[in-house]
Length: 323
Image 1 (cartoon, rainbow, N blue to C red):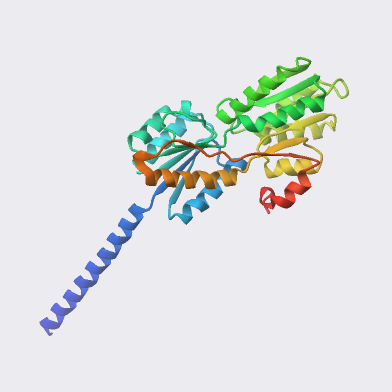
Image 2: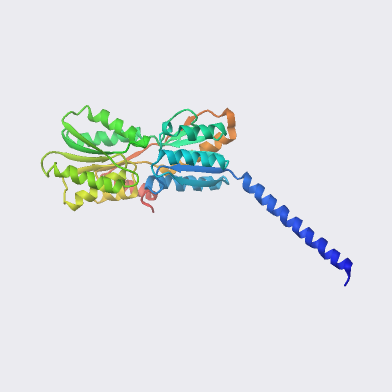
């Protein structure tokens, strides 16, 4: 055997090994350089949250970012833990989806200490927040005003609320303020859960209908987002009740279809996909600016949808119906 040829083979093998190691090292370095965007959602399966996540993920991909979605399932403790996990993973930016920033003190502090910019979609402004959009209060105003007008300023209304999310809390405050000006409208409130909002909406509506018979007075149900109101609609349909007006918020695809079919009276469409895009773009600016960044509000206006406007809306925004 020619030992020189063996030696040459060994040298070639070593060269290949070194080359492969260099490629792997370069790939690892490239992966480490890719910014990680964390999306901490109050409920990732809800339609509006899903639209935000999907649009934000696509926008992040255009920037070469990776995205990690964590569903905290309505639990603020899980959301804080998710923030801290993302900090350990050296995330480049984090978005709080709907949790009030006041309930995420530990998570936001961990991100701030690591100099990670934090955006909030519907969580409100606060210390350590770089960007805000998706605020809930303004969306409720035209819907509650329409509800009062449709009832003629009298009757009874069931409000389906949710206190863990700031968006719903802000909308409830708007509803309280407007309804307080119409003392002849009697208000009943029930708080739904996440998960379980469809079932709760149906259950609370069923109990409320038992004490509000057909034809007794003007009646309405309002959900602080569409899904509890859709749950209430299922109860109304089971009882063949057509005397109760139903109002939602967010403009989910099912709510728009419910308006088309005459089951829902009105909703306010939240362009959550555009909000997701704008949030990623704003956080990209914040990452680039570093310590020079100043907190910014980047709200996207809502659109009221009724039976009179739903077909025009569907033509202009087919994406809202999943088309």
